[in-house]
Image (cartoon, rainbow, N blue to C red; front, side, top):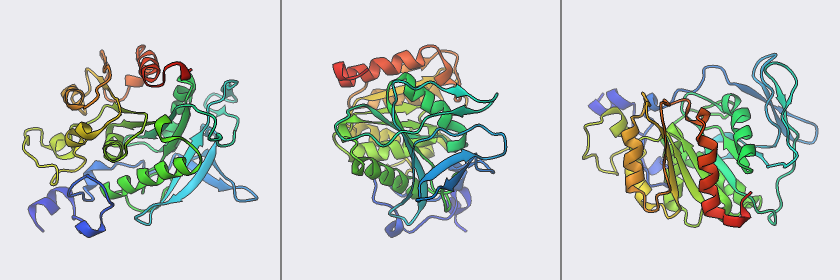
Amino acid sequence: MGFFESLFGALEPVQQLASSKSGLASSFGFVFQPPYQPGYKVSELPGGKLTLGPGRPGGRKMPEGDVTRLKTEREGSIIAVFIPYKPDFFPKQTSKTAYSLTAAPFPEATERRPTILMSHGTAVDLGRVLAFYSEIAKDLKCNLCAYDYTGYGQSKGRASIPDTIADINAVFQWLLSRGVQKQDIILYGQSLGSGPTLDLAARERGIGGVVLHAAFASGLRQVRPSGRLFPAWFDIYPNSELVQQVEAPVCVLHGTRDYVVDIEAGRHLHKLAKRPAQPYWAEGCDHENVEMSSGYIPHLRAYLQGIFGKRYG
């Protein structure tokens, strides 16, 4: 076994990788830490409609929306959900840990509203983030689309870097096929999710915007910070290279006390962005609580207002 195989895991043949700009992508098992137990279940109702439920008895109920299982270009099978904004939405507490949301159909193409396409971090799945982020999207008056990577939650297969690229591609195409306008889509990548987010954003012209939350400069620079000369073709998730190709406004969010991804990575990405929006340096926040800070929602509202103008809100 060679040096890179022993350090990162077996490399996949280049011809088998998803079409992307992520360079010499590989499995790199250390990147992925899916929860041991899926945080939710998928059930099929009469007629074929899919619904999400709590992963264990008495667990938090999942927000209802348009749930689908998508096949990716790498033959993966992933779960994605779309939760449309509802102005009359009020979370109804049904127990100490459960919330019930009213399902609504996919919006018609004529209903123009920002849609956040959320790519979550490495140690969670939809069961652990969907209820929380649906409330954030409600506060921002946006639709929310979220998905689980291959190998996460109820998405089948084994997680790998090229699979995450294929995953976000499939979800993005699903949104377009259902009438969501490209210019209304905000790609939101948190931590690990910044990799597939920037890969897609660098390839797609005309998207509304990109939010990078606790994003790393690149995969190899994250584990080898002194490796300043890694070429993009050799790197995994070369965010520093890809952010320079993004035409949409890029908003960087980062905690000043992030112990997992140093804030200098966020500052670096902000500096390199072709169209940098006002960044948000969350004072005193670490890798896992930026979204709990007082300035988080107001900052994102201002960012969306700058993109959509009078049409927003």
